[in-house]
Length: 195
Ligand SMILES: Nc1nc2c(ncn2[C@@H]2O[C@H](COP(=O)(O)OP(=O)(O)O)[C@@H](O)[C@H]2O)c(=O)[nH]1
Ligand SMILES: [Mg+2]
Image 1 (spheres, rainbow, N blue to C red):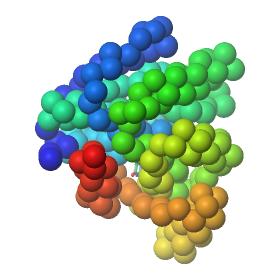
Image 2 (image 1 turned 30 degrees about the vertical axis):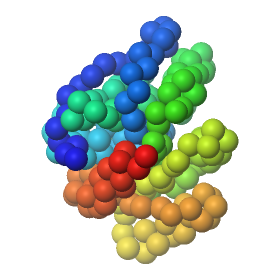
Image 3 (image 1 turned 180 degrees about the horizontal axis):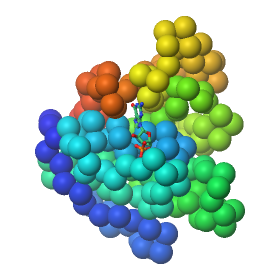
């Protein structure tokens, strides 16, 4: 499977109301705004800017679906928390995320939760993790932007993350330096191929 064989499929917004459920297996990316979701997707796709990235947090306000090899979806969900958004918009985005995960539940093969390695896991991340576990969806915890931290900080960040995610396996990546992107790619492919 080649993740680089990819095209943009469509955006889903709250009032899309219905999802066209076409039985394609899907991987979704979640995490706080600005954690690096769109960037890691571009790195996985080996594209520069297929997935829109932004240094301005709170920008993606819909679910953007990408179609790989005409068979699978990889989907960028909106950041689930950003303090500067109005409360009503925040609530709507949270609603979109849970609606999406529950509607597509049977097709979702892995939920990739990104945690900023510099900011560590926050309460909203843990809440999201627990929610995904309650749904019985498979999850992969990924520390992002590890090029931004030093070796000693890295150990602490990893320990903190493992501790807060009940010692679940944690992997780390850097999109800009292309560190461990292959490893994440393998995890994604395996979960898509797993029946
Ligand atoms: N240093 C560094 N910066 C990154 C990395 N990944 C993303 N960024 C930057 O973080 C910002 C947010 O990235 P984006 O992918 O749009 O985050 P999203 O809101 O979670 O989709 C952008 O300015 C990116 O250039 C990384 O691995 N290392
Ligand atoms: Mg984004």
